[in-house]
Length: 247
Image 1 (cartoon, rainbow, N blue to C red):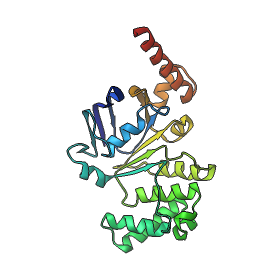
Image 2 (tube, helix red, strand yellow):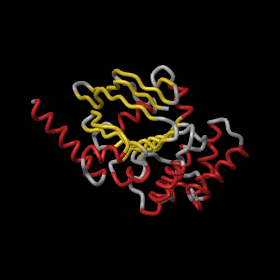
Image 3 (spheres, rainbow, N blue to C red):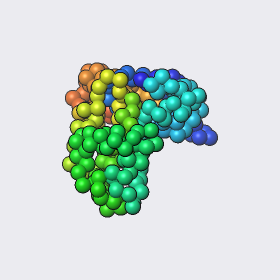
Image 4 (cartoon, helix red, strand yellow):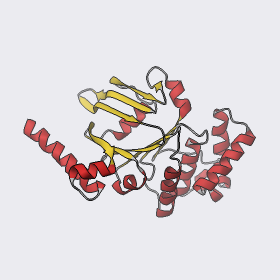
């Protein structure tokens, strides 16, 4: 479902990504972990065809992100923390509109909206104008909009940012329920407890480089730490120490 080979992205002298290689398969929730500036969003924007890599290759559900961007866009859904909604439209109107972009009939759209209402507890967001939403209400509709067409690959970039405890729980439960054959969820976060709960495997990025990738039990065993946050710091500090010695 995801193949990344030697992917790099530079801006002048600054390398946002350096020679990253990863694979992820169907049925997985795959985590991208790291602090702000680690390269997570750059990587996801390349996979969503919003940025072109400087070098290397990436394919999503068998489609090359550089050579087949339209095919990639048809099979992905993207959510990040900064997406907006038309203030004058209700949630139902937003979702019907996006369903139309994917060639769905009104009946198909309404059936799918009912499914998403059950999965995301959309409730009164469906018939309330977006301009009246709380942050949690808004993010629920943004997520529903991203998956209205049941994409093969769902990209969640810090999607829980700013959510209250109830909306965050709904999101995490939705991510766990989305794990099924023929589907892949990419879950980017700097909150390690979220990754421990929902991710099958994770990749840790630091300063644009891939530190490690694997299952959480494997990473804990490798570092000798008792949780992912401690393992993350152990790996990143080790990487920084090697860089300092090399310089």
